[in-house]
Length: 286
Image (cartoon, rainbow, N blue to C red):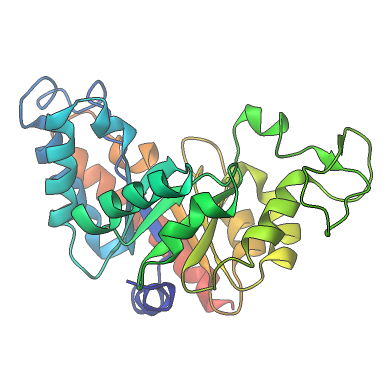
């Protein structure tokens, strides 16, 4: 599924909600916790319950990889259970030298057949290029994250940066030129198109969204952090939506762990529906 196809689904469902399947085995409903088939039963129930209210599912691969071979099998079965009407994301944050990234791309785009994957841009274009070479697949690059550690590098300011230089720019804490994450967005946006390239922007960085939209006005933004992490859907929608919608908002724990009881799927559906209704209101205001 391409970004343009995703837009069609958003318009149809009046929702730009992505449900994150961060299926932590320690947080499963009590009656499923410790069961051999607990995670897959949980995932399928969440998918069935939230399908009408979202357009995408994001599988955080760490929660499956940590279980070894069994976890990979559960991830594959979960992915296969999601219908083709919904955009599937491997939240894997990969990125390595070219030949290694080529293998990562094969793993997630061919062996598992995800629609998209999150990648880290720190190693530069050759680490991302193998993902972008796939037709009808989307590469989602980390832009500005909402964790405390984003201040270590992403928010640093660049001083006297010369676009013609191939060396790393001098970095300073002074208020000159632009921030490092802005340079990353500018540079990476030239490597792909609005159809095969998205960016991750944390919901708790909503005040930066207006600046980000000036840099990447046409690309989709994947915005995690709404719900349990405290991000504001109203602010994200206000600054993140563009003329083609261009926004995918992820909620994970707030939806999938809405209840620890046997009614967990019903409660997940209720939370997802509330997000969908709020999103529909913002879309009607465009």
